[in-house]
Image (cartoon, rainbow, N blue to C red):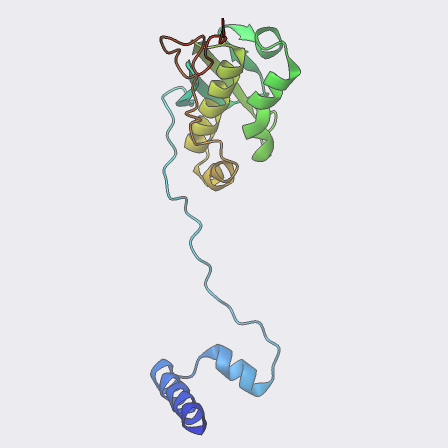
Length: 181
C-alpha cells in the first residue's frame, strides 16, 4: 500500500517536471484569488451558411408520404404554404403549433418568413414535412442553431409510414372475422 502511494507521488512529480510550472499552479501556491485567463475555444460553426442569391435558405422536408420544399428568409414571421396563409392551409391549431416548433425551440419566433410548397400525404404528414424542412433550412441559414435543433430531434426524418395491406387479410394485419360454422 505504501509503495503505491510513493509511486503515485513520484509520478506526479515527474508529471510536474514535464508540464512545468503553469500560471494556475503559481496562483494556487501563492494563495491568490486571481482568475487565470484561459484562451477561449473558437466559436466558429462547424458548417457554412448556405443561402441563395435572394438571401434565402432552402431545404426539403419529408414525413410519411408528404414532401415539402421550404425557403426561409429574414422577415416578420409570415408563413405561406402552397400560396395560402398558415391559418388557412392548416386550420387546426395543433398543426400550426407543429410548424412553429423549430422557431420556438431556437427562440426565433417572428424573425423569419417561410414559403413552402407541399405535396402528397395528409395534413398531419404535410405539417411534419414542413417542420422538418423548416428545421433543415434554419440550420442552413444559422449553422450555430444546429445543436439546439438537432437535440430536439427535428433534423431526423421520421421514417414511419403506413404498413401496406396484405392479400388474404382485411387490412395490414387484421384478419377477416373467423366463422366457426
